[in-house]
Length: 74
Image (cartoon, rainbow, N blue to C red):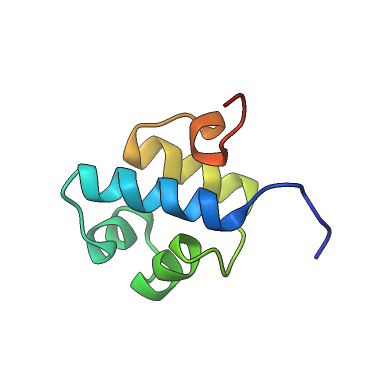
């Protein structure tokens, strides 16, 4: 996989923080996105990079910008 310069662990931590601030479980977020709880776990642990189309859907579901989730401009 090419190096994108993004820290998947930090992105996952921001995803987890936002999800928990909403009071959502991984299962709830998975249901909102039509994916599995295991995939949410992988993203939050930084084990799997999201496709750009998925990133957009995740950001819309949890109400944050992609820049925020990816840690850009911080």
